[in-house]
Image (cartoon, rainbow, N blue to C red; front, side, top):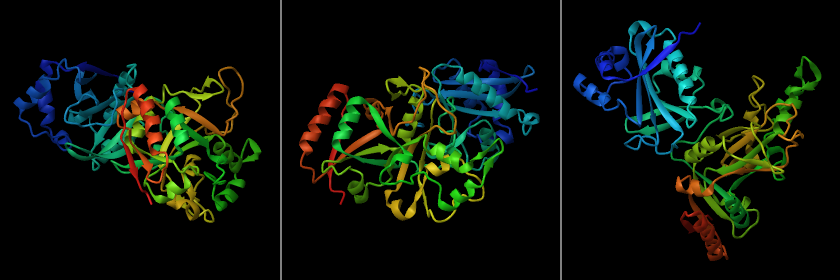
Length: 432
């Protein structure tokens, strides 16, 4: 039976034991602010009753054994987490008593504290920064469902940022996928007409991955994998193979695609033939964070109905390989791994980053009105462009210098942005 922790808000009478813990070798190894006892007391006395940082002493069997705190990432000072939104909190913690370390108590303490935090209506995401050498802590967080979301630079140096969402449909396959480095930008070339429609109606356009006209095998299995999966049958459905399963998953997955470089290739190939095509410039990690945090409220509309609990959302760089050779042939891969695999010979120049909405599995899916959801070729995913601009998720719009309608496009977008009470810079550039 798992022990039950009691979390008591920090009080004046806890400060002596806190000083004692901070001076223990196993704590100082990973948490050492080089403070005297007087400075420790001064620092944490200021946090008693604070409205930004909330420190607690963790009790087990009526004995204090550890320290844990959470804080609002959007309010913490020194620009620690500039990309985070108001529904994200950070946590820090340690087991203070030596006879309670290496016994699983840290994992249990954090797990129970997470339940407490996620019971708060406005908390949707928990982050923690971990030294990359602290393997024990990393394993502890991984057991609790945290994943390494990025390496970030903080006032204390570069750390592993580990993340846990309340909604289990948000990035459930993150450990299998890969993100660009901190500070990376994403570029999306689109016809000016389609972009204006997207901004006016606040949505991102997602295409079903098996319906791309220019890539009939997008997210498909490489040839040797396909042959192998044909031979793998389900025990209770001998006529249903792993290939059938992968095909079913593929037909229920949608993608919104970006590039990690604004090359002449993407301008030529992804503006839908529009001489007035424009390029949207996004901050990659702010975009990921913005989509994830707003995922709970996001409207995915199909024939006037909101789809709830239908999809997983994932984000990753695309891996390129040879479709003539087996990919991940040592095991039957998770279907999401094929969603982020493309033929190198034809598509390597895309340098693609994609966002996917996946409804994995082979069962039928029913809408709120009782009818079956038939997975159309495309979906509109609600996206608040005004809020994205305010939060610098969408940073810039680039207009090709050969566009004949530059001023007309600028005016149309300015009129829309004025109504939304936001401003965004336009750059006229020659990507060739």
